[in-house]
Amino acid sequence: MKKFLLGTAALVALGVPAMAADMGVRPAYRPAPYFSWTGCYVGVNIGYATGTSQQAAEPGSVLIGPGTVAPFGPPPPPPAGSPLSQAPFAFGQGADITPHYHISGILAGGTGGCQYQAGAWVFGIEADGGPANVNGQATDQFPFNPQFVNQVHERSFTTLRGRIGYAVDKWLFYATGGAAWATVEATAWDGCSVNASGIGGAVVSPGCGASIFGPGGTAALAAGVPSIHDKETMVGYAVGAGVEYALGYGWSIKSEYIYINFKSKDFFSPGQSLSCCVTPTFVSPTKVALYDHTFKWGLNYKFDWGWGKAAPVRVTK
Image (tube, rainbow, N blue to C red; front, side, top):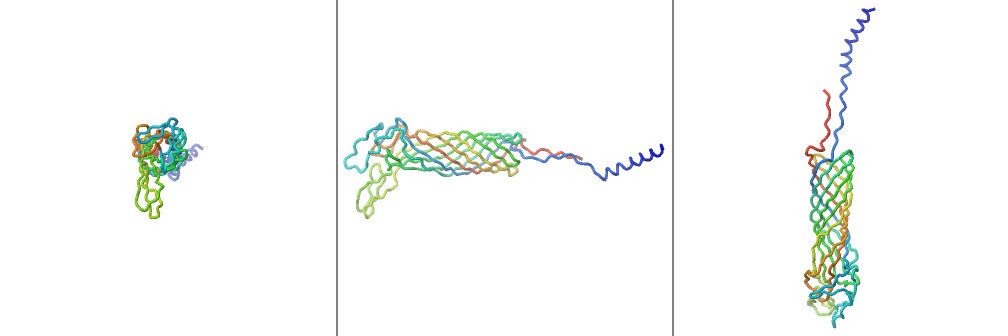
């Protein structure tokens, strides 16, 4: 019996290595590499802006002209034979000079920021800015003279915003909000024409654009000349959302929408120069309000600097 047991044990010992060789060794668990959004980045963007603007008279504003600073009140009687009625200037302190009117244009610039990923959540801060060409204009409304035109022109944008996002591998969906600045130019000019008849030729009326008279004696309005101009920096807030996709090797593309509310700011402070006008027609100061909807597309490059690299893969030999 003892010899039988010893022989069986020897056979089992001899067979185990052969069975192990046939079965092979199960490799250790290898976690899949992952992408991380942690790091700092720079990029470029281009976009389109559309929105509204409006001009209004501030309480205490005055109507100004060459050598004239007059508070709102009953207008002086119109000069004898004047083709221009001064009745629209009778009142309007605190009233809207223009209705809300449409503005639109393009914008472009650079982007920079840093972010950190914790699980699926991504937290960061971003700044962007650059030149813009966003503008629009409207004629004045009652009680102001509808022959006058007000225009705004946004020359540049800058924002500084926080970001919070949710990552799904190489996709990042985020919300953003912060402060915004814009360089804005405001211009008002007299676009009136002289109501008169003539036979050909051109007549220039002081304070008005050139009035070109055709053979039939009908007055046609030429382009009005700029009459008052100002440039200011407007400050507001920006909120929006976007989506970004990692292409690999540090590159990513994004698309985002940001709403910017610049609220309002005074332009045409007293003492600024005018190029022309006969009657007191320009409101000083004029409150300008701006609201923008911006749509941007960008390309970013992220610097890992040792962060955000793929997890190491364990290999068993």
